[in-house]
Image 1 (tube, protein in one colour):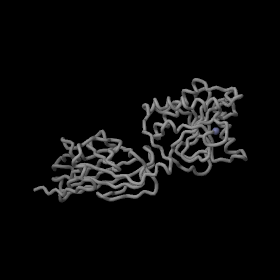
Image 2 (tube, protein in one colour; image 1 turned 45 degrees about the horizontal axis):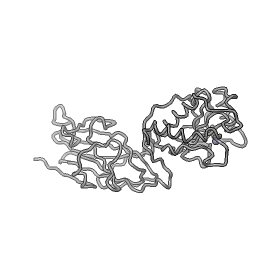
Image 3 (spheres, helix red, strand yellow; image 1 turned 180 degrees about the vertical axis):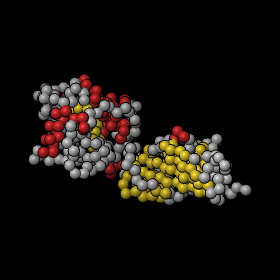
Image 4 (tube, protein in one colour; image 1 turned 90 degrees about the vertical axis):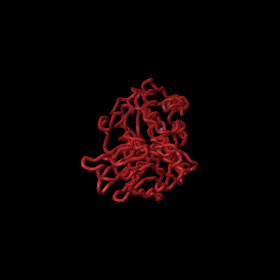
Length: 353
Ligand SMILES: [Zn+2]
């Protein structure tokens, strides 16, 4: 006789809902988000020793060679994005755990799709975890075991309830994450960068700030040596003495995109710097400065802004000019006037958002 110890944890609503596969975004139920997984291979980052039942109602141990089931299996979900930033999470799941079997579900959290991740939190149903910082992405894993191999636990659904969003306070990005192809970028090794000094501080990008160099002008640009000159100035000039080149990216008149600092660390290009990615166009775009964006430079700028906006879920309105924050001509009148047009183009790339 099978004894099912059915736990209806968290939200009974789950049972009444159709099994919709929402691989990346939670289902809104008032202020709750329910996540239901069909536990198919495509919705998983890793699967071993487990499989979905044919009716997709649950995740169970895979058939064994000598026994009905293998004795242990693991399922790791793909990375999921919550509909909002959260500081606390309550898990709910429905399952059957017959005697002699066990089922553990754990979750981990991240600010960005690419990590870094918190540790794994083992979360029994109805457990709430409070986090020190806001996070946006979730991954869960389920470990199934069977002592004898003749019974299997079954995981039927998972739900999550996110609490305490702090979007406004922290100005965190609220756009959709869209994976666009990464533009070609000249690496620090390729342009001969010096190593940075000390430790970088990490941040989550939520604004893209466009600059110009003013000096050097487009005419003075000589490729990598120009970028090295800017880095030397930022690190060595008594007025600066920064840890590294201030910008995250620089774009030459030839359209080459150079890597400055990693965009996941705080730069030195505006005040305040936290959460802002600095993209610097080489040239003097402030009249009477002679420069105008070249076609190559413009194309690279749109590629780069679109890629970054998509990766970090930054809305097109999050594309700013340096002068939006400080009293400065930067990024030059010709570029600043172009920003509304660039936002529209980036919006088109992101799918019209
Ligand atoms: Zn600037």
